[in-house]
Image 1 (tube, rainbow, N blue to C red):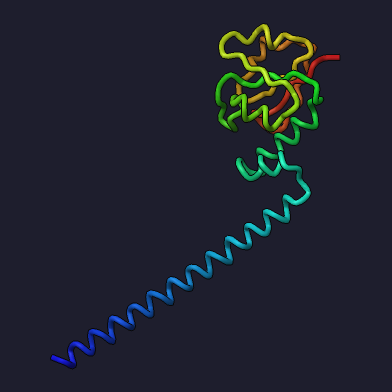
Image 2: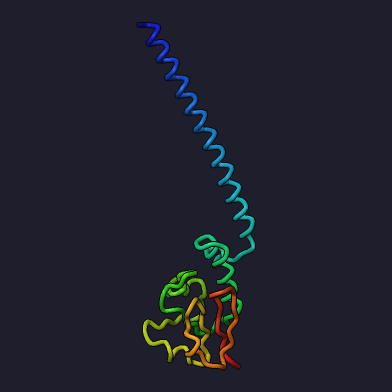
Length: 157
């Protein structure tokens, strides 16, 4: 009886040690992986301003690149029309979000009838998927594409 108890105790200790070793191995691997990713991200973002770091950290580098594209193409005193509904790429219809990323530019949206706002001559229009409808955009506005389905209509000169 005593031998059986001793064997059980040894097996329990051995299994516990094996489990602890496996846990330590997994934790060390996860730590190396996360530390490497974090270090790479910090090094990659150290030259970005706070807004672009926020865009990259929150939505990824593609979104940050699109925001950088918009910020470089739209003057700070401009009015910007954003899509009225969520598209397949990003939440560009979120007014507070876009106001943060494009500040100090004025953000406008059109919940229903957009034809009037699209036609305003000085307005920059953020393009996503099927917004704005091509038949509503004045011929004077020039389309600059960032990637398929994303771009910006610039006011005509």
